Image: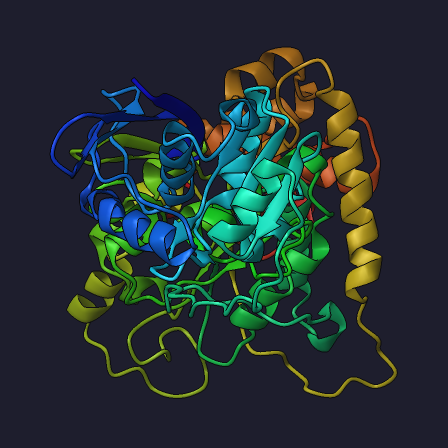
Amino acid sequence: MPLAQTWSVALVGLEGHLVEVEADIAQGLPKTTLIGLPDASLSEARDRVRAAVVNSGERFPDRKVTIGLSPATLPKTGSHYDVAIACALLAAAGVLDISSLRRSAMIGELGLDGRVREVRGALAMTLAASRSGFDRIVVPELNAGEARLVPGIDVYGVRSLRQVLAILRGDEIPDEAPPRAEPRLLSESLTRVPEVDLDDVIGQHEGRRAIEAAAAGGHHLFLHGPPGSGKTMLAERLAGLMPDLSTDDSLEVSAVHSLAGLLTNDAELVVRPPFIAPHHTASLSSLVGGGSGMPRPGAISCAHRGILFIDEAPEMHPLTLDTLRQPLESGFVEVHRSAAVAKFPARFMLVLAANPCPCGLSGTNQGICNCTPHVLARYRQRISGPIKDRLDIQRQILPAARTITDGETAESTAVVAERVRAARDRQAFRYRDTGWILNSEVPGPVLRREFPLDGASQRLLEDLYAAGRITARGFDRVVRVAWTLADLQGIDTPTRELTHQAFQLRSGEPLTALADARPLKGTAA
């Protein structure tokens, strides 16, 4: 009985699983059966493949055909198995050499005329095939750019099933019309910002200090102040202060963006930290990820190794905002669906911006706030305490005193980015024997045990904790920020002054000298 097999890849989150595609042709009435837990779009492959084979000049078997996808217990979703199914079927029919399918993986959706259409997640699938030892992979031509980002595997970008068969037979590859890129149905909540420079920001010395420390240590940041004070300007310039991604991080981030449909056709590795700014009306699933059947990554995974900026944060639904609590601690998010549980990386810097009240005038000298105490309290409670407790740096941004300065020039992004790079190098060297890279990633107990502060700094934090001005979690986060400030200054250990400044960055107090600091009453930082 004629039997042939080839290979494709199934994605569960970013994890690729090799799928063996088998085709069996037996005596019986013409019928095509597809088994192996296919979803609706994959079940329709029977008709797509039949039309594509016939319209490519080949003969579709007029007997009983069984297509099996193994492992049978793994749910299969999507239309990217079409090319593998067609090749396995033609090999079983005897018009292809079965040996030509060995060590080759195939992905691509077939049009009824035999064209090979682009698919999502080609980079992640190619990574999975390469790690499984495959020598070559056949992909749609529009996905070839991202697939070739993976080293060590030959990538064949094809426009049609006819070209695939010519490659497998060793024949001359026929010329085909260039493929037409399909419209990319990207989430409207995902936006990119243009290249901007920090020297555009006039004044705002405390705000500039805050974003520099956040970029150097990977600390989460909360900026609050009246409209027009410069919160969004500072947040948009934060990504420019961060160094390029490492090779491993670039591949991981690019794989997430490929699965989300964010990579362009002339794909290159994502080398800059991504800046993702979902609108405050974004739904929970668009933020975390989801979808029917196999889940897709959301905004927080697209911001992996970069920045997730939420402007007008109190306007976002509190339950949606609170879903960030677990990813902020763990660095990943799990999306549970009936078909599978998908795990996506989500180690990002969270930057929130907020007005002081619905009208934006509370606590400012720009006008009279008409918000009632009840409205003020309800507005400020929309960002929950557990979320605020996870934000290492919290700064009030007030309008600059002057819009034009006499002879004063602000530091550019390039100058500040060089200090940030040097600070990150110091962190990488200090934690070289551990699994961490940035101060914000090191667990508090490890930081206190392996990298203790000096006696004066320790006593300062213990006094603040005893006075109820910082929580136990806040204690550890102040220590992390203090180490970042020391790295920015190029010193080996945080001083008492830097530790106090770290507390001020954490609590939102004005940045004053230690001798001028006065005890403040209020909630714990």
